[in-house]
Length: 349
Image (tube, rainbow, N blue to C red):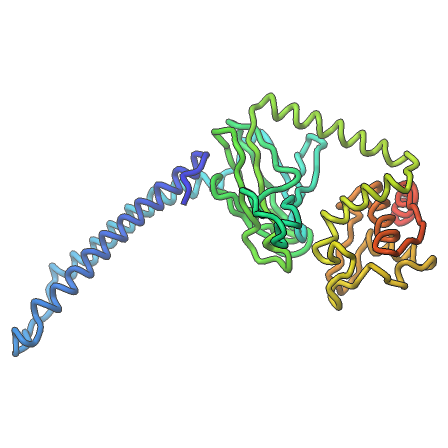
């Protein structure tokens, strides 16, 4: 169990070690007396068993001692629990939403939101490369937080139950659809702290890491400014006319991050749960274009296919649809533009 880098994590670690020590002492005493009694009063030494009745003093002692021990453990534990469940006076609020199988972070009142996805190369997962130091615990967009600042977490889920867990922060909280759970932290040391989803949440549960990067106040403000500028730049790209080469390059990157785990890098899928995209006549036909875009935007009810209208930008969706319709020998020649995606989204409102 790590000591951690927050006041709460140190208190939890201390409680753990104190209670562990108490349990060890009790175990030694109890088993010591038990084995001593077995040896000292074995039948071969005392043929006739002793006969005795209750002792009020002994009964009071073995009742009082456990009560005192429990109170000694309960008092500091209760004080720590009160701190854990008190997110008041937070200076930064972060809404954390679990998705299958990624996290979305939104800094409330800062106009900054983004998704965090596993970034471990597929070659490492498939055993084609040596595993990296942060194998299955690295992400493309870590949660960046300032040090020496109380940060409140609001946790929920978009689909199934997840759990956001970072051991070194002593934070583990369920993300439940339709509910908001609260937690908080105050990181004292800059650095990178890793965790995982701690609730079995489906096929790629093991590919849903958490990465927190603690930085100085100035670096945090710079991070927010850069994120806002990047969002404006991405929005401007939606009015651009993209070439086929540009769409294919970006579409491959989006597909690798969001689609390859189910539909496989070669587009062959894992039927029947995850159908093949390569050579799929229903999808790559001219009449299948609208259905294809609709599937990517809104998913398909009753299947494992989620919708990406809230997850991906119009540029990303246009690019990945273009890539899927022209990769693996599909070669439809369709080049979907972001404006087409925005028109569909606007019509649905």
